[in-house]
Amino acid sequence: MKFRALLVAACLALPAILEYGARPAYAQARGAQPPAADTEATAIPGVVAPGATVHVIKDGFSGSEGTIALPDGSVIFSETTANRTIKIDKDDTVSTFMENTNGANGMFFDKEGRLFVTHVPFGTGGISILYPPAAKKTLLDNYEGKPFGRANDLTVDKRGGVYFTDSANAMPLPATGVPLPPGLYYLPPNATKPIQILTDIPFPNGVVLTPDEKTLYLNNTNGEYMLAFDVQPDGSLKNRRNFAKYDKVTPNAAGVPISGADGLTMDSEGRLYAACTTGVQVFSKQGEYLGTIPMPRQPQNLSFAGADKKTLYVVGRGVASKVQMLSQGMKERPR
Image 1 (cartoon, rainbow, N blue to C red):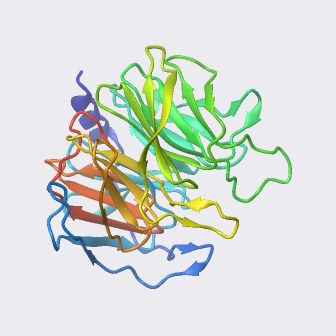
Image 2 (cartoon, rainbow, N blue to C red):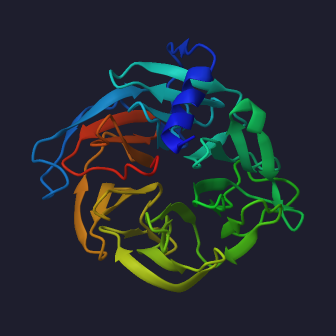
């Protein structure tokens, strides 16, 4: 079966969707925030029209990460702290898609319609397949016997290999079992042991592959630049380079440049969209900064969805929002 048909079948086979009711408001470590309000986009040619409304769908989620599109135009994302996955239909109806997800964070459907996820809990975090039930299994939960600190984002290539990041910021910090350093990994198809690609980036985060899978892009939360790599036939990466410089990077008290770059996606023209501290920053396929779409609250992840993939859904700090775009997401990929 084709990828789209399999995903549709998977959605129809799920138990009845539960109505999503009121939940406790999400609060950052800095304290609860005022209710989120719609914002207005400034024009980015070919990307978003002037005055386009960034509409708040719902506030008050207990964590918001890992957006991914379903073939019917709806979108799902991880309500990480609440241990479930949320679905937003095309009419903005919000419901529970899946419960008991063990802190699922990043998500990606492979070409067979299997839902790959990262899990953030220290000691039990890693990579698994959550859906369909017959394929549900843990793929890995350690590297050379050491636990991941906080498995973060992932993408799956056409062969079934998985690139994933471990930000290593285990929360709360473990009393024992010191986590691995922040890293980028690759789990080859049908393998049980990942390949550690790098450990010298302070906070690796969102990852995305180009449609031809010749280039991989990586967001660095605590850095000035998005990175790019050339993908080799065996899945390894070469020619690491600074691809795009984030706008308005602010150093912290220790002088570390903080971009806040988190989730990452790409449109059909090769432009990249990074969820950053200032909003959704947009870059050309050559790495030129094109502009920022302001968000109701600092974004964490994003995905194109909708019937024509011209709606950008953005989640972050307990808020789910959407904005109608001029640009279009990649139809051959769920994010």
